Length: 202
Image 1: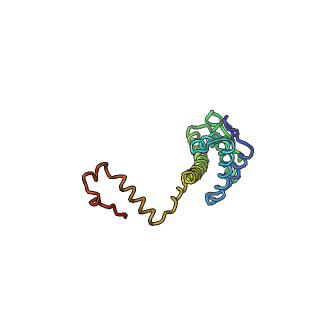
Image 2: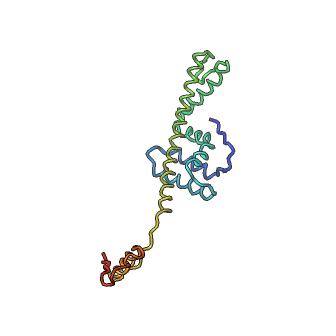
Image 3: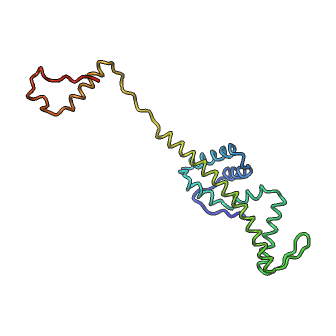
């Protein structure tokens, strides 16, 4: 399995590569361990000045897709690795019209049915690796979604200062003053002073 590293504005450090190696070794049940590794990625990318959104994280992972798939491949049982590599070698040979001799001495002719068979086998192997890769990316997406939601909630959550305490009389005075301020000018004009209604406090 050839590893091809695409150019990126972000340089993947040796530490990042080691984290990928650790990550692909984990099985699906080890969610807590994955979160610890995702935390390390998050911290590294933040420290390098990257805004860690889901789209940017996916872009960074996709730029190292072949490397990550190669790491996943190396976690497979050795017998399965050998089977995959031989299937690729066979297909590469017979699709170009050259018969292939297996390690067991069997000759596979470059017939159309054999080309179809090994093309399908290689495709299925790639699908298996792609599914593992996509599952890893989805786990990271879910981690980032929760992480960024928590940060947003923390940043937006603040206490409004409590108003100063007032006693009952001060409260009545405030309510009466507010009520009077809402009465239109001239409301009491023409009324005798003794006939003005008192605004009772609530």
